[in-house]
Structures are given as structure tokens and as C-alpha cells.
Amino acid sequence: MTARRWSTPATPDEVRVHFGRERPLVGMVHLLPLPGSPRFGGSIGAVIERARADAEVLLAEGMDGVLVENFGDAPFAGGRVEAVTVAAMTMAVEAVRRVAGERPVGVNVLRNDAASALGVAAATGASFIRVNVHTGVMFTDQGVLEGEAHRTLRERERIAPDLLVLGDVLVKHAAAPAGIDPQMAAADLRERGLADILIASGARTGAPTDPARVEAVRRGAPGAPVWVGSGMTVENAAELISVADGVIVGSVLHRGGEVGRGIEGARVRALVEELRGSGGR
Image (cartoon, rainbow, N blue to C red):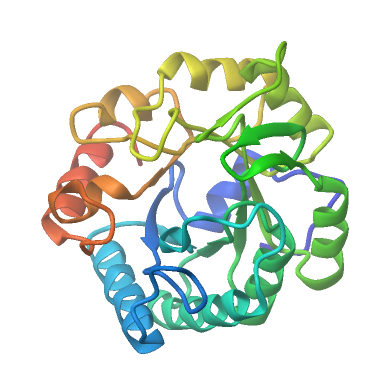
């Protein structure tokens, strides 16, 4: 994509060009625990090798891009992560970028560190970030998370103006303040937070996304690309792809459907075939 001003959210056509497909399929690379986190296994080499291997399978079996996330680092920081986390994620994303070639790679620094995600993306050449709370407030197991869209977009303009920002609408593993619904949150995320792509998800990792929630997000932000962010399976793929402009999928693709066991090619292949046959062109 050509350089865009941060004041103009991406159009559906720009997103299509960016990902090379009308309804992109993005696979999650859930990183093993990183140095400094409680469950780190002692080898950054093992973390990077798993990330590389998972990305290879996802892309070989038909995913249009991948999103790298420090999923194994629970319990997550509510604000800025430690420097060692940024360093380790930069190494892992760089390894995945080498596998992906020209295909899009994204970064999500849990729980809500958009500044570090931007830094990793700018340093590695990744082309999009995911921000769990880009606008508004959510109550989470990390405490109260507040969106910092004003800082994120100004920093993007400074270091990575071509990069897309994907924002969650009332992110999973969290509760919204009273009186806020998906339609209202989507309107703010697009119109005031200027997010390029809006993500609708289920309540938890792997939980199915309610098609009615996707439609509510679409009503709140007409014309904005809306993606499904959790719970897609072979069984519900046709229903969800019929209401969504793209998909992010992760846990169901691991062996036995258990995150951390490694991506299984047959699972990716089955889902991709179902999605392509159901309108995920």
C-alpha cells in the first residue's frame, strides 16, 4: 500500500490490496512463553523455532497472513511490557517475516501495549498491529485498560505510516462499562479512533463469535472492514464468513485444538478449504 495519513482509515479496497484477497484469512502465531515470563522454558531459540514452524504451516496451507502474539506470557501486563519482551518479540517477528516473504505479518503485544507493537512492527517490517483496547475503557483481569488511540496514531504517523491498525470492539476476556454496546463501541473505534479494521470476537479465546455481534459492529461503523476474531471452526465457517470481511483464527488450528501444541497442517487445510468454498475468496 502507498503511504496513508493517519487521519484517513483504510477503505475495504485498501485492505483487499494489503492482504491480496477480498476476505483475508489470518492465522495466529501464538508465541511460547518469552524470557521474563513465569513459564519461560529457558530457550529463546525454542520460542523462535516454534514461531517459524507455525508460520510455515499456516502460510503453506493457505493463510493470507499471520499475526504474532505473546500468548504464552500470562499473566499479562496491563500497560507497557518489559524491555526483554519487546526484544524477544522483535526476534520472533523477524523470523516469521523471513518465512512470510511479501505476505502480511502483524504484531499484538498483550495485553494492550500498542506502543511496543508499533516499535516491533517498524523494526521488522511487519505491516499491521492489533490493539485490544484502542478506544474506550474495558474491565479486565489486568485491571482497567484505557485506549490510547491519540498516542498510537501519532506514533504510527512518525515511524510506520503504512501500517494498518486492527482494533477490537469490546475485546474478549473483558467487560464493558454499563451502557456501552458493540454498535456504540464500533462507531467510536472507527469514527474517533480511526481504526482501519474492526474485530468482533466471542467472550474468550476460542469462543465462537456471534454473527449478530458482527452485524451490530457493522451497523455502528458502516463501510468499515469487520473481521471475526475468535471461535471460527470448520462447522461454523460458512455462517461466519457470510457476515465478515476477514478472519483471524488460532486455537482451533493447534493439535487437538489446544493452544501451545503447535499448528497442525491438516486442521489449517480443512478450515481454509471450507472458507474458500463458503465465499472467503
